[in-house]
Structure formats: structure tokens, C-alpha cells
Length: 187
Image (tube, rainbow, N blue to C red; front, side, top):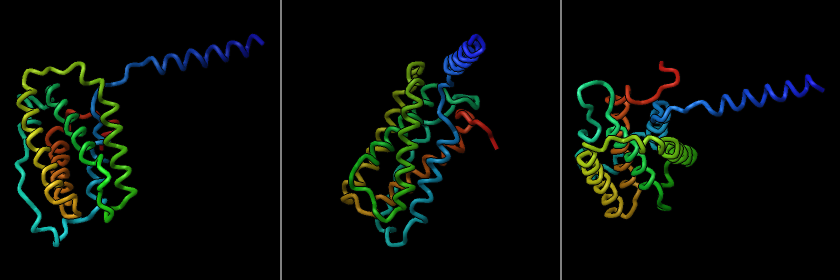
């Protein structure tokens, strides 16, 4: 009886120790990469029939700019977080393209949502001194993307333009802000 009580207490103390460990409050690089790969793979190359719908949208690179070193400022990390929220908003419609791989689309949406939920804690420690400039660039960029969708009545080609823009955005984040993301096993 005493041994059983000791085993139960040991198990309980181990669980308390594991669940009380602080979790890193940082965007996960592997999830950002998965988001990019799912978006890339759900639809293939940009369709030739959609070339006439392809429009130029100026990408707000300054929203993700680092200040000197390789580490992204906290307001830059918030820009990545806000980007994910904007992506979630764009894909929150019922008028998604049916020509895309629906399973990959669902996984994509779930991973974007997971990233948003898991990095909310990051927002409490944000240095907002330069964030208004970043936020304005993102607001304009995602406003333009949403306008294309509405103008083209959520057509397949409009969604392909959106996918192209979001792929570029995620590639930019992975290439230029990779050191600011949390990587479990970097390969």
C-alpha cells in the first residue's frame, strides 16, 4: 500500500513538473514552413488561364524588417502574427476554391489557426514603438488582397492570385526572418 502511494505521488509530481515548465512564447518555424508547403501544394503552379487576373501588389517588406541584427524586434514578430491573422481572415469565407486539394486546404487552415492561438502570449510583451508603420503596410497589403477577391467575386483565378501573394509572403518570412522563429530540430 505504501509503495503504491509513493508511485502515485511520484507520477503526480512528475506531471506537475512537466506542466509547470514555461513554454517558449515564439512563433514556430516548422509550422510556418508547413503552412507555406501546404499552400504551395494545394493548387500546383499558377494557372495559365489566370494570367489575365494576375495583378501586382506591392509587398510590405518593411513590415518584417530587422533592426540591425538577425533577431526580429517584438513588433516585427507581431507583424508575422498579424500576417497569420490576416491569412486566417481571408480563408474564413465559405467561398473557397473547390479545385484545390481540400484536405491540404483544411490542414492549412488548421495550422494557421493553431499558430495564432499558440502565439497570442507573445502580444503582451510587444514593443510597439515601430509597429504602427509595420501595421499600416500590412493593412494596405491585405486590404488589396481582399479587394481582388471581392472584385473578382471569389473566383478560382482570384484565389490563385491570393495564393501566389501569400506564398511570396511566407517565403519572405522564412528566408528573411527564419532566425526569429522557434525551430525544434533545425535541419
